[in-house]
Image 1 (cartoon, one colour):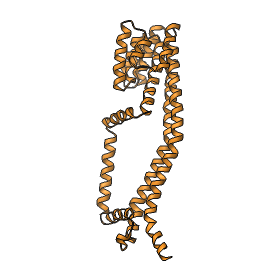
Image 2 (image 1 turned 60 degrees about the vertical axis):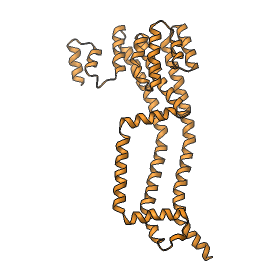
Image 3 (image 1 turned 90 degrees about the horizontal axis):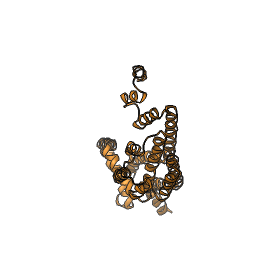
Image 4 (image 1 turned 180 degrees about the vertical axis):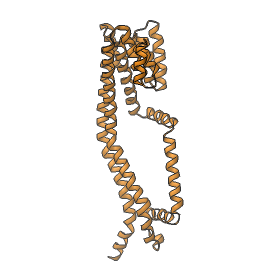
Length: 302
């Protein structure tokens, strides 16, 4: 790839054109930034801006991933413990309680029936679990599943709003980079179109581009089509009056980033203990149902 870039540049192609020849290795935003930098004579500054943009977006992703690591570990460990209890411990307890029969509490009886069924049909149960896990893995890796999950998340109170802000953050930060590189606003909006992946936002951007092309101010077009909240619209008005729209776009993106960071921090502090309590209740419930007949027997002996 690098040798081909050198070869294309030596043959007289522009750097942006050489990058387009290797488009599968470089993002369209990077190529657009380089092209704008070549046109304005500020290629070095355009590369510096893209590097800063890439670092900022990486920090946002790392922040979100970091906040999800601990809950994911809790879920993984809890799932493994529950599988160990249900697939190994419960079947052995069921053989102990075979002669007790209907004297067991109802839920304990159901749990022991599961253990007995697993003892008698272990091979079929294991095959069924493997088939179910394979099917689930296949479904999860399908693009349609991800789209369905995202659509569902967009409808959830609170979460949908933060997803919208996250897309706005990437959208405005990208616009700030492209405008700083000298790209016209309409071209920058068309270049950043792929960052708005929610259908209503995509439709709103299409209408906003049309209105801006017809002479409408950016702030009015964005407000009318739901592409910024009230604070963002007011900042856009300031940018139109001052003429420093790239700086205003970057400030709006930072505002949304800070909002998302605060929400993620609060949600993590709230969700983690709730998740721990839920997993503890499930595991504790299974253990209690296994030992409840022993407790009752000890009580009857006394």
